[in-house]
Length: 320
Image 1: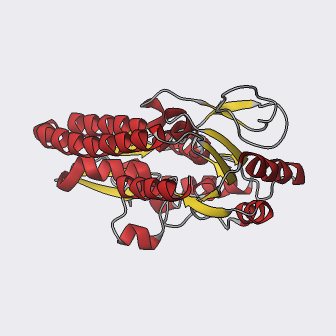
Image 2: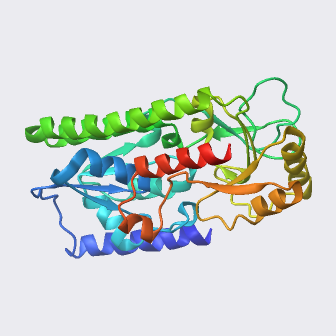
């Protein structure tokens, strides 16, 4: 409720500025297209597809947790005035729909979840599943479907498809430079697809593809593409910080029983749960970067979706 009140206050400020003439009444096209993205993957795909022809802004501050992000009046103005607004369309940016319904957007919007086929997310249960099943998310009991997983970019195939969708939209907005957008887009999509083949080649040689995450699990699409069985403390969009004792015991037993060598955690996690499970089971921990956001150091060092996923591949080779 408090977060919604702050969002309404920010919207009121934007509407006041617009009414007072401090924001442009009409969108004036500059030389470069302006693109605003809510999360790092969309930002990365847009800057790759746009190249020198697009000015791309990332709304989510480096190192910030996407599920607790709150837009400022300046952020809302940027969304209102840009040529292309890229957002997930999932739970972590539910605030977007409120903004789009409240302001007069001067450009276009593209949802990443509309670019690919969606998979359902499960909240709890895995030990009662029989046979080969990917729908593991939390603790003992039977799985419960709670909607679609928004983390669509974690599959490289999806990432390539989203990149092409972004490139196509940029070409529609700036047809005079359509050829450049197409070349940029295909170049980056080809790099992602080459990485995708590397992942496939790696997993082809892995007999046991079971992964345990002592953390949230926003990798449903990655697991589906590469046929990975997974167990995790929380689902991808969970706001929980501590799993139940039963969940920790279940995951610890799973690591022990199946001889799993590594317990995984994701970026910006304190990885206390992963550490606890790993210590109890006598195994190590490792980071799997979901690419949802990056740190300031990573951004300044030129991190990309491809470089982060290459890092994940190397970590998998060392730990799986």
